[in-house]
Image (cartoon, rainbow, N blue to C red; front, side):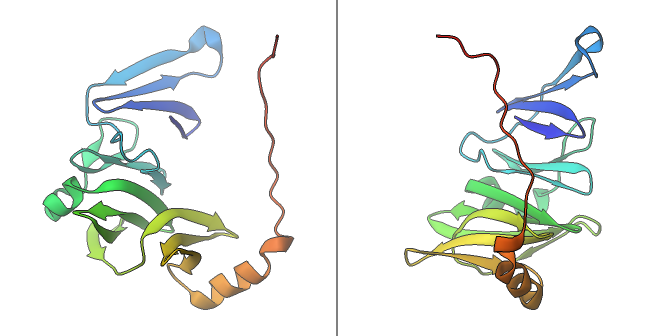
Length: 178
């Protein structure tokens, strides 16, 4: 489940469900029979430029409010066989990492030009947005590191000031009874 443009979106492996509306009296449910998020890639979702990208069993799909479309068909088996995928985004770029045949693989996708590139990196645990930049959270030889996907100088500045960053957050529960 994730929020997309203010609406909750639920995924099954072969279904996408969207709940629209602003109050209970006008809620509506839309269900699409299509490829959903792969069960082995629960972190395989990311929004870039108001488009929700996700990893399904046979590729990376883009959902922009209507029927999802596959954007990775040209990558072949390398993307279809990707396991434990994680997605991250910054600017117009989508980053996809996971395992293929026991090896760590990484792709970047230029969402404006529709161009895929492979890149080299240690195994990616997830992507982290910190201070407006996306960092790749990697595990290499038992050590965890944060790597910048763009500007190393900007990443160092953000990491140096990370303790000063204040994020507003809250946690809300329903009524709890015993």
